[in-house]
Image 1 (cartoon, rainbow, N blue to C red):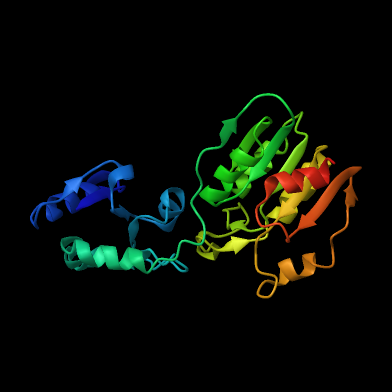
Image 2 (image 1 turned 180 degrees about the vertical axis):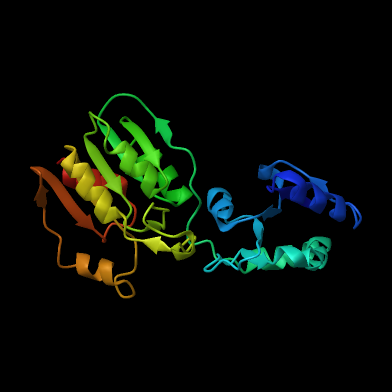
Length: 252
C-alpha cells in the first residue's frame, strides 16, 4: 500500500523503519499515497483531501477531525500496524467518507477576451461547467474562500459568480481545534460584499435544496437586484449551477 509520511525528523524516520518490518509498503509522493501520516492538525489542514486517509500522530488529541482521518497518541505507534497492514480496511474507511466538497486546488485561468469573470465553487464539476457555459470570457476559477477573497481584490474584475457554501477556512482568530475540516460555511455572502466593494457585479448562485437549507429558502423571497457600492448583487437559487443564466441576469 502507498503511504506518505509527512512527519519530518527522527520521528518520521523511526516510523518508516518500523513499518518496513511489516509487509511490503511503498513510501511515495503525496499524490500517489492512499494513507498519509501527519504529526498535527495544522499539517492535516494543509494537506487534507477527501481521497486519502489521514492519521494524526499527536500527544494531545485534536478535536473535530474529518471522517477520513483519525488520531493516534504518539506513544501508541504500535496501533498503526494493523491499520497499515490491511489495505482493505483503508478502502472501507474511505468509502464511509462523504465527499460533500472538494479540497482546494490551484486557481485556474481560462480564456481571453470578453468580460473578466471570477468564478468560485468548491465542486470540480461546477468549475468545469463554468468553463463551458462562460466560454468567450476571461475566467479566473477559484475553489476556496481564501482564493476568492484575493481574486476579487484585483483591479479590472467585471463580474463575480460565487457559490454560497464553501469549506471552512483557517483564520488567524480561530484556534486550530475550532476548525471543522470540510464543514461548509456561507462564505459567498462575504465574497459578494467584498467583490462589490471593489467594483464588480455579483451573483451568489446556490443549488442547495430550499426545503432543507435555511439560506436557500430565504433566497426564495429575495429575488431582487440589490445595489452595493453602486454594483448589482443577485441571490439565485432557482437555476442550479447555470452560470450563463446568472451572468445574463447580471448583464442583460
